[in-house]
Length: 194
Ligand SMILES: CC(C)(COP(=O)(O)OP(=O)(O)OC[C@H]1O[C@@H](n2cnc3c(N)ncnc32)[C@H](O)[C@@H]1OP(=O)(O)O)[C@@H](O)C(=O)NCCC(=O)NCCS
Image (cartoon, rainbow, N blue to C red; front, side):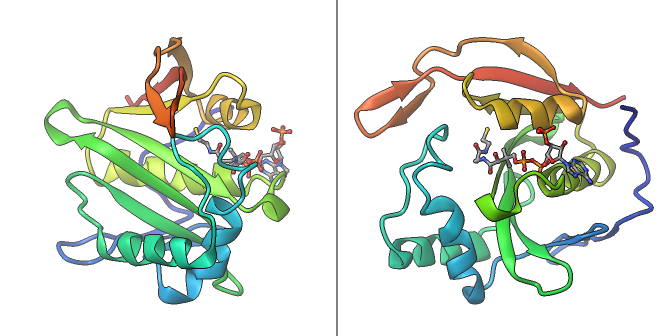
């Protein structure tokens, strides 16, 4: 599959100093988190099954998720990290989250993460969202290397990054993630922009 990460024609990206970089794709609106996203995000990060391959324990209740929504809404520091609420274009309902983090502008690199409500799996929606964020990072932030750190049993996530042109780079990264008293050893995938 050939993907074009240069000028993004199918999306509308607004990214200026002080303005949150809202991204529109064919089916999605990637925007800043808002208080109304509590339930949608909770359906993601409150689902122990969905976060089982993350360095994150599932939120136990909606109040816990609500505080994350507040944090995510406030912290858009493009130099380091941005988290987008993934919303359905038609309804603006939050169905997931995509982010980049650990950005190092000097080294032109960053890492990505993503999660999608179970009911919306299998439609290519997160691939669409991640592809749009990759375009943004490459086109607007001058990123060259995009990394994804993925648990070896997380088959849907591995399929997603492979679909988008990432290569397996190595691993396991031993005891890279600490979750409670346990450690996980994920694998490293990366995409290099031309
Ligand atoms: C990772 C995760 C987002 C993948 O979800 P997903 O629904 O498989 O991914 P997409 O939304 O991109 O959908 C892709 C699937 O839809 C299918 N599909 C259907 N219509 C499609 C379309 N129009 N375009 C593209 N793909 C389409 C694809 O074939 C693919 O299925 P396949 O992998 O069986 O071939 C999801 O499993 C998740 O939220 N996991 C929990 C969080 C997590 O682990 N995040 C990653 C941390 S590293």
